[in-house]
Image (cartoon, rainbow, N blue to C red; front, side, top):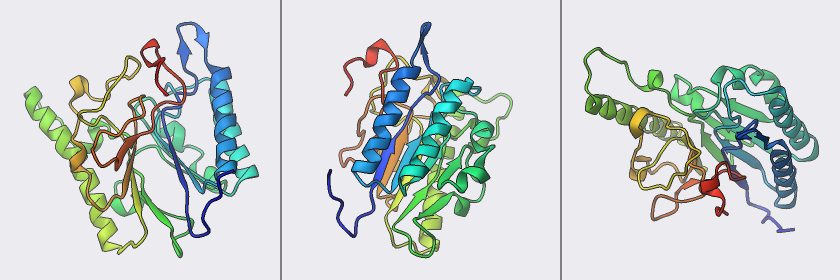
Length: 263
């Protein structure tokens, strides 16, 4: 066991579980169950305070009951055997409504879900372990659909759409960072995201989240208020910025043959 310092608050960043994923006709349920069992063991052994899932909890918007059972069994096991909180955002494969339907019940199990982006930037900030004595603030920004960040108009060119999508994504993070300043938050702030950062390496199993890669942004656009940017969507664990502040957790198991050598 790795002993955690007394004054530490430990966050585990994971993403892209894709529960319910099939490889051709082959079920991945046994592999996914083994991963979740392993993850729970890591939370206990590493004395993790927050498990942060950066999107694509499920592989489809309407996951099979077996995939939902894996998810809820993990929520129950995490709550029952640890004091850790579970924080999840929606990815492009997830249904925001499906994730958020049990939101109030899940909150009683220390599980916090943002399937869709909150309209008020202040509502995106989650203070843990409590608002009165926070050790970390999490800016919960899920996958941003086009309707969240721009208004489509007839006759737009592809370059105009590309510019608006990127500007909308950047504006969402900027206005969230501004709230961090207004609230005078003193603890470290982690931002989440489910998108493509320019320069990162993709694989065959990712589904384009904006047509033609329109939503790809540079790592430098994430405001300095965010000490760490926890990303999902690309399945290879990597840091597309030189500082390592912006990171993809990667998928826990290979989701295509192109990922077979990933660690």
